[in-house]
Image (cartoon, rainbow, N blue to C red):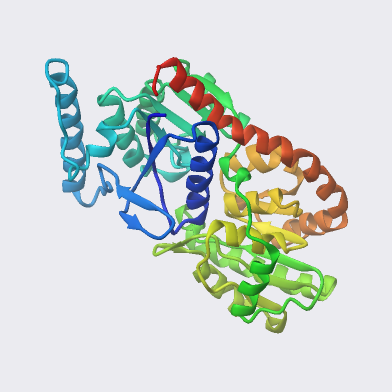
Length: 414
């Protein structure tokens, strides 16, 4: 049922990878015979997935030629659209335009790539969406967090492009509120849920095998998982914040070991060359005093494997959105360190865990420990609450695919 191109596919960021896997599963649930192609910043081929390179690879202000090439492709798309009104146009399979040109619908699966938390970075994604729009392809934003742009130029560009899409599926209410407040009203807008809630973990026996391979023995109880990250490098006071956050998480680890007799398990969720969570984990580990009670995941694993590992924890402290989604969807009480509205919208509002979220710019040892101990003392209530809400959230995640199918049916795409 039609050719679907999914933009923003990635591999090393396991949250992004979880989105791609889940998006494919959800689309195929409603359209089993749909042909799905993936496109991302890098060309990747593994046994599990093939990702073609975006039309515009990356935009760098310090490399003006990347911007020039990006806009040349946009002009080429406009030219192809014009001449296709008068004649049949054939695109070589070697062309970066091939998959976009031959798609029936384009789905952007970026999580929060188009939100206001990343400065000028959304420009690359907006440009790749513009290629699809220029080629008259219906565009769907699939399970996104959008808006709250700090840069006025990005806000203008976002408003224009978002109004040109056909369907916007946001994963929390805060994004819809922003869109309506800023006159994004041309596309249909629905609040669904993050597709990764639909992702299944590996079996516990396979998790134990991974832990054995990592020489990790979680003999003490409870097991408290911590997912730090290098995401703070986008803040203005990043050096002080990184130093403070690493020290706070080290002190928190020692506190939990002393007070709860806990085993601490550091779990990475992003493995990119510029933002590897394991680098942050190593810095924190150096500062921990009770190292004999601390373990860390050193290898690179799939989203399903990481979800299974996180599911063994009795409590989870997270910074990465999809690490927190993995934890809560496994009914693990979670304390979130938030750096954008998405954490408040998904973990706070949708899952009812707002009281256990602390903004990264306001973080300190005392407040974080207070939230952790409160979550620990109320863990049975939190788990029961999640057991009630997660099945409903999974249904909402599945609705992303239903809305896309309805759009394709209305456009008579088959």
